[in-house]
Length: 138
Image: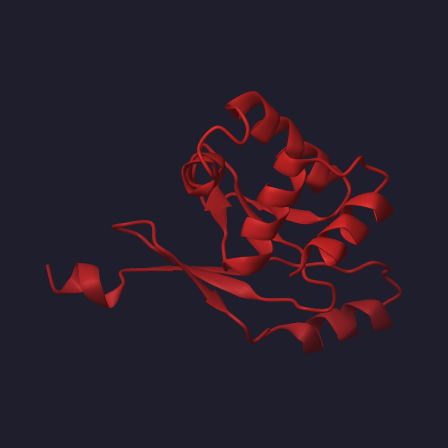
């Protein structure tokens, strides 16, 4: 995503365009997450922002629906870019905690049936926990 597109997303959310915000958003649009705040901090250019700025920006982006926040039975959140129109699920390794994105949604038909029952704004989250091939071979 180029700087013009990043600026548009940030401005449309009602936020000021800053170098830290642009760098955080660029990272999360370029690399497939989800990533913890610590992982994001490690991937950012050194000296670009401090941890307080990172946490504040993640909170703002989540509130503005720019990012999704996910918890996988962990005591911390992971963040990923909220691609409009792109819904997916995750496989989480029970041993190493590696997260793999599943691009296919397995339950969209159920969402539609729930809407037929009169419910609005139906959402779901589906997570799979398993032992990855690498951990099985250890």
